[in-house]
Amino acid sequence: MTRVVRKRLQALLFVLLGVAVLVPLHADEKPTKKADPVEALRQTQRSNNRVDTAIRNALQFFKNQQNVDGSIGKRRDTISARRPTADTALALLAFVATGTVPGEPRYGTVVEKGLDFLLSEGRQNAQGYFGGRDKRGMYTHGITTLLLVELLGMGVTAKQDEKLLRACKKAIDVILRSQAVAKGKRDRGGWRYTPRAEDSDLSVTVWQVTALRAARNIGLDVPQRSIDEAVSYVRRCFHTEHGGFSYQPPVNGIKAPTASTTAAGLFSLQVCGIYEGPDVQSAADWLMHDSPRLTLRANWFYYGVYYYAQAMHQLGERHTKHARKVLQGLLLNADNPMQLPDGSFKSAPASSAEKTAGPIYRTTMAVLALSAEYELLPIFQR
Image (cartoon, rainbow, N blue to C red):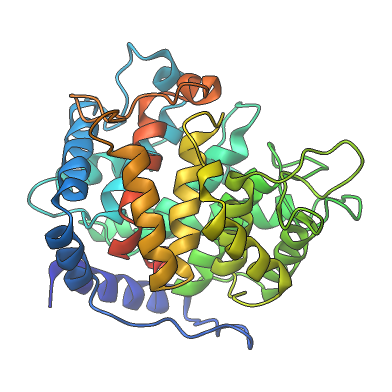
């Protein structure tokens, strides 16, 4: 048994003992297909060493970006200085998704120090919120909550594990309270930029629902009603005319679906156990046959490739192979490589928003896209 698999089993046992409840899957959900994730990783690496090399270089970049306090993102980068919680959580997601947990020989110390930073005083407020004063803090909160849930029971000490469990419970409560804020019919069930927001959008919602589902999978108390309401919101974002998901439920003047939002909507349904339906099939067909829309000219290019990779992988081997070819052509093209010599990923030409978001964000999204087939992060498993 590998160390990663053993740690996952220990994590599950820890949480079950800690919360004394195991929440069953919804009746219409497919059981998780169990496979040896490390063997899948080895097969992928054997078949394409370029991917392995790119990921290894990216992880080294993150390691080089770690500060003394454990945060990731050098302070000369003003973006990292403004949002150390988000950047640290993103980078740690890349490590965990590629097989590194606290205690691992190569990068385990990086994850351990980063986790200590996220659990340190001041990162999470008394109400459980990780977003601080950021006007779009629910992004940070959802990302950080997802990471911490996936690391439950993996702390290197009992004290760290206890802090993790407390932080996760409080963070999940924030997400549930935010969803329960009174909203109009169009926005009900989703999330937006702040915990008290009275509207919703798909981009923020997908992070929250992924965190909730990861928490539910490992046994934390997440009501099925919350998952069902989130599914209803995501499905309201489906654009029947165009066959994809849009940023918000369609109304007059709303933008048509893009490849990025369609992939995000499809993945949201998949992590909630929705694998069938006209919207699922339509979105899957669009991504399969119209993936060229996912281009370097897209404003949120890395956001798109991340959700595209995850959603396509959930659809099965045929879609996975197609996505692999598309992603490697976009990210690892020898004539126009997106990865820089230091291991980070550069901005796409038209993506001014992602240039501002910074190298930690771009590199994490690239790693999560390229490692989709590894299935080492439980929430990403097919």
